Image 1 (cartoon, rainbow, N blue to C red):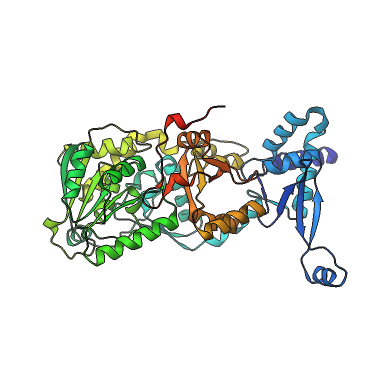
Image 2 (image 1 turned 135 degrees about the vertical axis):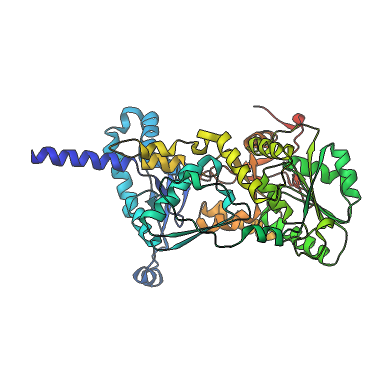
Length: 502
């Protein structure tokens, strides 16, 4: 009986091990030799190694050569695949030569972990740090940005922290989402800002005006008559098109087609121009709606969710220096149809509220907006059915699978590195030599633009992009410098005639 228990325990350990997600050490450099075998460059650190390097000429790095199966496995360690996922790929590649599969795979990972070549993203030790959040105050800034596709599990997580970790949660937002109905237990909610109706009235600095349906030409005619105005549209393509037509001194363009460091430069120039009371027209996407301190005389906003409309209004008469009646937020829709990813339901609800004659800046309208939106979305508020994993009676919870599925940012985009500055060139060279490191990627993000897969396919097919390194998934370098300009950022319009098919 004792032997049987031991065997059962070992099997459970093996099953649990297969659920782990390995991650390569960001400090470990590696490359391939001329035969395609992976070589790990392990730095010899510590006092004794330093002495040996000086006295006995011991090399700074020890080279660890992986065999054929080790070489195959190493690039598969991407922080997404479980040990089980990798084992299946090894089996498919090597067949009978990989047997006994699981004991060999587990031994491989035990060895590379013992040398700190890898770690496990979801190993139980990671969870042991969770207790540190107990008795804390947790602040959610811009709480309306909680992702709709994962709203139910997010609220469940907040409720868990409130009830069992004795935390206090603060939601900061000008557009409070209607979340009360999602809590399963009685949660004591306190409004930190008293007399909210009076505060809404006191901070009212703009008037909303619906100007109906317009063409691009009509909108551009209105903007040419403005002195200091912000125009926010729903797509990067639309923002670029309008800017191209209006382009002159004092007219600017901002979108996520520009890398972050580039956007900061443009924003600084815009602030300077506004401060000097010079003509300034900005064509932008929603990226200016939160966390950007700009103050325009008027704002044009393409129809979107109520929360976005109010955020946009925060860029008009922000300093309160002008009369309310002179500070207008003009709402419009385009005659020309466009595909707006992930916004259709928000737009439809806002359209309905406007048709009912509601004032978008009223508290009741904001609450009604979120109630209607959540009702329409229904089951899609838990897109990956995360709650089912923990509400159904199961002996074993699939934590690893939930960890893989619960991604706030879906991977339907690719990252493009823009090498057009001296600092960017230095970072790129380092990435090509060292591969993925946390510090390297953090520096690189200042020069990166994300593109949807459809646009990426066209650009890649036209030979405008190339992978930065073999071990860096979904990360590419822009090779056609003409596709990125100081005014427009990354040009998204790709002539079909430029696309090459192989």
